[in-house]
Image (cartoon, rainbow over all chains, first blue to last red; front, side, top):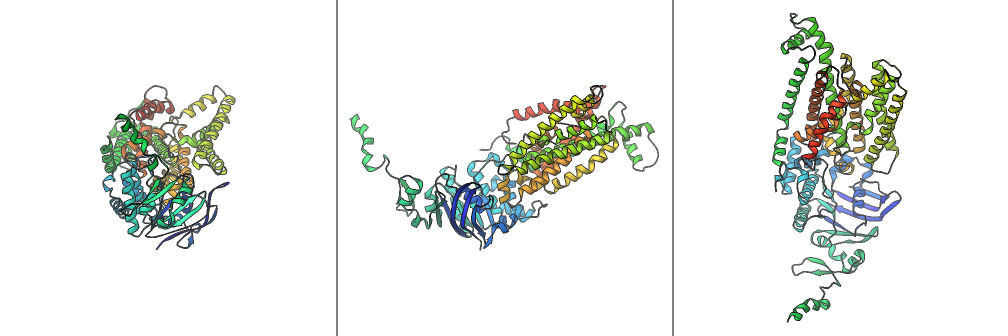
Length: 275
Length: 347
């Protein structure tokens, strides 16, 4: 059972601190959702958790061992990274992109084995995109690229996956598709930490939520406990309320807009004037 | 949904093995043809007879003159063209991947300019050819080492950007030094020699040249072949490569050193030959796709074929030899423009 834990983590760049004193943990089987306004340092935090940029304070522990003491190959076998869907410079086949996830399991001078190809194929099938295998990664849609990058993380066979805004720039259907896949992965025993700009995602999918604002933790815990109208309004700097739908889902709704009851009559006025 | 062109590319991928075989066979035929042509034509059957003789075969079916032409002049020159073309194409493929930029050539870190400066100094000081070649080799390696040292000293920036900028600056500096050497050089004797060297030529190829460059090319090629799968990860950028479990900084030093060693050793023999390292990786990618596993052999075969063809034209087209740098540009520039015009947005 893998566990990722940040203790008093300070992150940012030399002379340019972004966040401080962040404590969080991620265990296999759960979905941790990181929320926060633009520029609050979600991506920087993720890169620090992964050890891609040096941390400024605190510790990052992977199975009770400081990641600074671990070899990159060892970290990659335990924790995979799904960056925001991007275009590569060269048009690799989707199958080759996923195959790159196997690198940490092989020696420095080795090439992918048939076993690795099977594992990559299985990861593509798990994401439901095995028919893309021979296509160019540069010529598929943004949603498909995101699924390919997740498949690569699966092929990496790590128990923990860090996903940086997996739903950014996806249409609504692809957002649902990606998040449903994430839920399946958690159900299958993987731990996923993902960032999003949509608090509704946290309500619908997250086991726990971590709210970041002004470089510090604003709240952390179960979504229904943490994401209160007061907290959301304060962190995002806009009036927000939370409504519970009859189906049991929670949605965030902006308040104080023209669609509210007291401002509704003007919409009806043209009809009256036309009488 | 299916973008135009993708089915062909898919087919190209699955058939990469046979395609590389066909390219290699074409290269062999081209090499055989190149050995036959010249001021003293040698028919194919005589080539085989001479080769059999050379390998310790029986009766002397060939006359001594044919053997001299073949073994002292033509075969060394053909081998040199193959070696230079393959090495430059391999180095270009590596550099384009490492710098994640399809417009990069092996000269990006100043290896050719540095080698040019070394050779110009050797000629200015009236050194023997072997010493001049040594100067060129050292100049190429030294310039790239200096570029790397400067880039490593400048911390806190995008490491690749700093490396390229340092290469551009130091390359320009070396170019200025070459101009200075040209001004100091004897205009009737040394200056033409420097100019010709900077345009590249295999006209003066000695049998020993192949043997002096070969070990370095092989030494540079070994890490490229061993690391050819990981080379793919380097094109994703440092952060992604790190998250996938490799150490991109260490790998980059090794790969740059290997590609630079290959470039410097062949530039020392042939002079500055442009375009091969820039254009051949593109054509190879069109044929077998970007996976470095297949791209490296395809680019090397294509580079060797291209330079052999150009060099054969250079030595047969006119009474005086045409410098390679001119011909590779005349052929390379239209090809490159055609590649741009065919409108592939990704390489």
